Length: 315
Image (tube, rainbow, N blue to C red; front, side, top):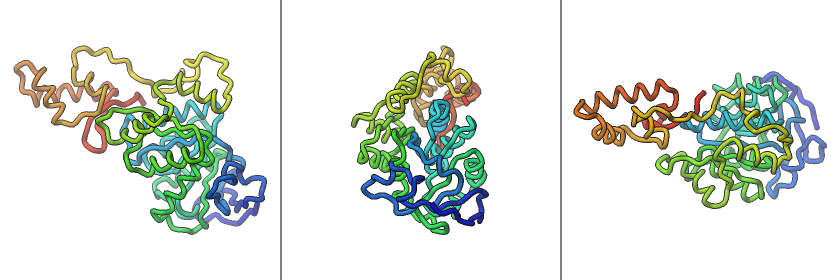
């Protein structure tokens, strides 16, 4: 392992790590398409077999909140969180680990001196400051070009003993990471979502093909125990007692819009059809506006980037 003088943007120790070095993770060394060298800023000892958590860049509030929740649960069990640093679910997983003051590893598509996305520079610095690592197989100043991200995804899958897919469309870069995980015989976990949501089509397909569906905290923690041997010597509910992102129990029987949106994402056209059935002589548009505002105020539903409304875990 060669320590180098490299503080172009991110502050921290910088290294070039070769397959013959002890610090080069065996999980990557044994890959059929193993990297020839790793460039790293931060702590080389963070390169442990952790859990990869990936999902859509244009994630829904549901996807972001699920990512935060399960990433924090895994981090609390001492498992390194591994992802790709992109906006959306990737960033949410890293930030969840950082909130727990636990290690997280960011695999970049370009070189470590090519901060991408640019808006995540502060998060990357915090990753380094909190004993994690920013890593790439590309030279320090290699540009973040599209094909390098697909190659990067194999490293996320390779270093992960298990891969959790939170949101993924078909096709998508996220789904390509799952393909690598399957190719490398890794455990694949998937968060199910509404069949009406394109962001969940990849997750649901993975479950159909045999991925373990992560339907609640108990299932997830049991999976961690089976895969990582985490000592779950307490009731699983205790492990989540201080985590804010918990599923809501729906008790509002007077707002059918809230009930509908907590089960699936819906467009305004679909919501208007419900309004026509339930507005009882009131202007459906006015009734819908009132019920939608009331539903959003509960924090149980939110507007998605594509204009639809749907469920979200409390954050």
